[in-house]
Length: 251
Image (cartoon, rainbow, N blue to C red; front, side, top):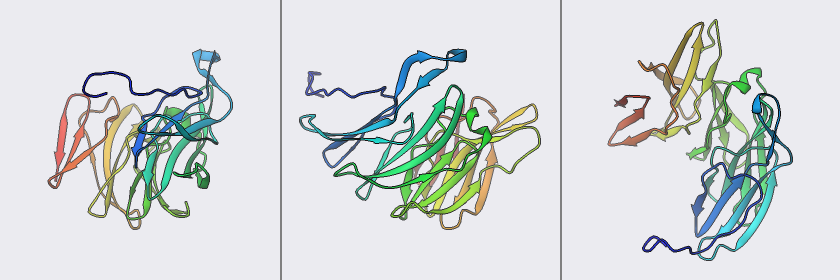
């Protein structure tokens, strides 16, 4: 209880809780990863089975439904839009990340509506969360993928509408998307990336047209490391971005 701190309800879930719950229409949606207490080389966690998604009644905590989705890990939080729960998931063995998916579930039943499997890229093991929390606007779903692309999906069907590389490929190393969700405003989508150019590390933000994925502009930060990990904010026609020791404001 927010007034006195007393416990209102609790409910047990199987697996490891690694993402933030989502609340919508008096329902709490939560996801767990199937992390094993065992480890393999380099103390990497061992995963087996499938990640789980739960729906609980907000008032009394009773479980409404429970379902499994393909993938071992759900670290980025799900998102709710127009009766759908959008769940990003990833398969992991040791330090290898593959089979990244976004699954659309019916919020009332937990039944799968569609899923989209992101193309495999050998560089995916470089980024721990692999897929960002989905952002939804204009009946489109926008996600950052670890391999350096931003992807737009049709909200109803899961069909890919466009895919754009955030940073053009450079000699010396990969580009990777940040784990932060894209932000959308005024028919534009804004995201961040991390680029390795030989011995240099670059942080960069980019703006794209939501209709066709065309890049509008990009800007490189003075702070090269660590990568941008906090979500952007938009207010009063301005974009606010935090880096390690600075805050940037753009028109």
